Each structure stands twice: as structure tokens, then as C-alpha cells.
Image (cartoon, rainbow, N blue to C red; front, side, top):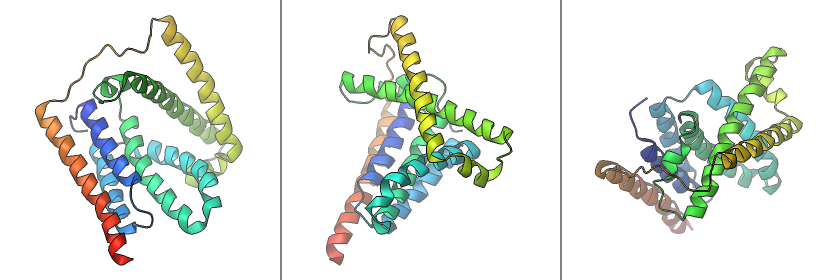
Length: 222
């Protein structure tokens, strides 16, 4: 994996995710561009493909239950767009050193309360990843090997159990943090260097151009 600082990785990931999330509906061409960027980003971070695939499968099953009632045409775009965003953020999280989310989070120019919520969300996601890994190992021990076996194992009931187990463990982790003196403050400073700021500005400029172009093209076509 390239030596990319944690704050820079977070900022670049957010630029891709926000740009893709704000795309005009049915802008498939520009969504394909974001999809290619997401795959390149996963390749740059050298994310473990088996773990990424298992996590994406679980998340997409859960999202499909919410999107399919909207209609197949709308749901298909929402699911593909969600897949692009999940590839980017899961690639960031899966390559994140343990308990280092707060270091990357400190560089975001957002209020402290929001940073605290994001930090707790990041801790929950780390726990969720561990629970998914345990469920995959349990499925393999029961003879459910391969992608098809894992998808059969990850039914709606198992997804519910996954989130309940991870939520219960997250509550215990938060209680342990409070016991050790956590008060919402992040004691570590991680400012972006000039070259990193330039890279972040470039990434946001590209994302803004791609997203705005999807709206302009839609207006021209209509």
C-alpha cells in the first residue's frame, strides 16, 4: 500500500463518496466513471478482496430490502451508486490501522459534536467488520464455502443478528471508553501538509466537475 497519510486517505475517500452520492439520477455514464475511480482507489489501498467482497455482499443485501420497493429502474441506480460509495469507504476502513480513525477524523473541518458522532460511528464500523469476519468464519465451519454459500448464510435474519450483536458490543466499547476518561475530545492533531491540501483540492475539483456535468447533460438532453 502506498504511504498515504490517514487524513489524506479520509479526505480523498470523502470526495469520491460525496461526488458519487450527489450524481443526477440515471447518469449512468458518470456513475461508471466514479465506479472506475472507486476500483482504482481500492487497488491503490490494496484492500483484501475476500473481506471487501463479503462485506459488500452483506451490505447490499440489506440495502436491496430498502431500495427494491422504489421500483426496479430507480432501485438499480441507487444500488449501483451505493455499491460505488461502499467500495470507497470500505476500502478506507479495511486498510485503516486499528483504533486510528480518530487521527484521520481530527483533520475534518466540522464541529466537535459531529466529530464525536463520527468517531463513535467509526468505532461501530470497526466492530461491524469484526462481526462480519466472525460470521464468515462460522459459515465456513458449517460447510458454506464460496460466494453462493455466504449469500445463503447472510439471510435477512442473520443480518439482523449481525447488527444486534455489533450494537451490543459497541455499547460495551463506549462504556469502556468513558471509564478510561473519554469526554468527546480528540487529543491528537493531524493537520494536512501543503502537498496534501493540494491533492484534496484537486480531488474535490474533479468530483464537483463530474457531478455538475451529470446535471448539465441531463438538462441538455431534456
